[in-house]
Image (cartoon, rainbow, N blue to C red; front, side, top):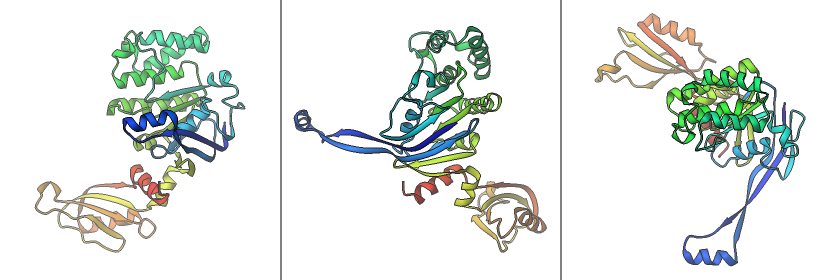
Length: 331
């Protein structure tokens, strides 16, 4: 269980204008700016949850993660994870957490991946039987067998990220913090990472806190999101409910053969059919509000007018939802 209450954190950052003269001046007199990274942030996460922690750059996501990992000490507020305060009892705390920072590595650059894993085994004092079991499982699930003998510096970004995830789980952590775990990965690598995280959560009950700008990660993995902006926690809710809050409307993509169906009350044409483009003939993109007209009723009415070949129904995308939330909260 993760309990955060009233977390606040400020940074003091030196500022100066560009140029040699200003650099010399800064040696004797520096100007500082105080940045409020976290402002009274409170939330809780149950065991076994996967939670998406989202917000724009500089919102306070990484500061929150580092605080929960015990790397940073907040100026005020409380954080209790599995009965421990992370920054006061770091050694015991880190044995129960795994962390992946997408832009920083916990592997040693010039030695083979397997050697890095052995070093982490010794650092975390993992029992030999537990280590062998976890290494075999992670190697199989993440497809690492052919790269275990390769130095980390020779790995592609996708290969390295899979090794980073494996390294963070060798000691059987109860909580996994993923900070931009799919940054820069190709489509196949992203799918593999998402599939693995879901499987780990389902089979081991691992709690996952995910921060990312990739909304496909959020849609694929999480049911609940926390929105942070300018250091404040702005929203805590279910992903599907938030989509309905932003826009309850459904989008219908239809392909038909025969005469063009006429529009009726409750249906709005989103994209004009391009008669002069052969590829677009027999296709329409429609919008409807299920509160006034159900999807099934709309499809039935359209089918009475023309021969429907294909129908797909979509909600607002996660990207559209987040963009609307950013606009609503002016972040």
